[in-house]
Length: 252
Image (tube, rainbow, N blue to C red):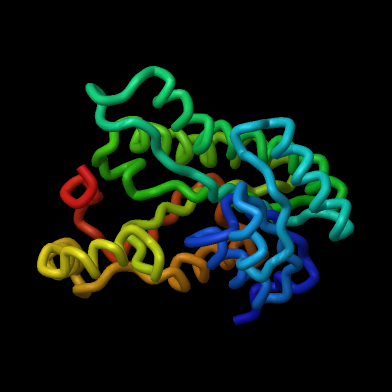
């Protein structure tokens, strides 16, 4: 099934590794001109995709990066707000500053990125944005600041889907579960705590394995594409029917 993405232009935050890079490469395979952003120039270079260095928690720097990408590629059709992370520990082991930083790198960056992309989308007759959240946003699990931020991202996509719909702009959320890839946290658990990892995969996943990067990226491409034109303001989960977020048992 052709997705109709050929010739479009995309910008991916947090695109120098992990899920963001997988989405960027999958979009490129579909004929999309992709620009990724990240903070580490070496990782950007290693990604193999055109990159712009930017700290997504700096709204002005993020806006400049998106505008520059649109100028380089002649416009912008697609945006993936993938950058994220968590600061501090649990509720009793984190500060107000930790919570603020967690919200900045997740929710606020996504809102700022989409706001900057809107005029570029409108010049192309419309666009599609995807906010990469997490099943932690609707299946509560540690850490509380991260879970709350991811829940906010899911609701952000739902509300922006309504707010921007009249401008022919779709906004959806994608919520991956635990994703296994080399260099990622779950690969470390697999290699260093194999018995716990095997029990985790067996007990929490009906198919006995974690989700793979390509599986997340394929769903992302579909949601961004015209073939998903009727999907707007939705939260699509890609977790292999994972029982619940379980990172706390490995990363207390």
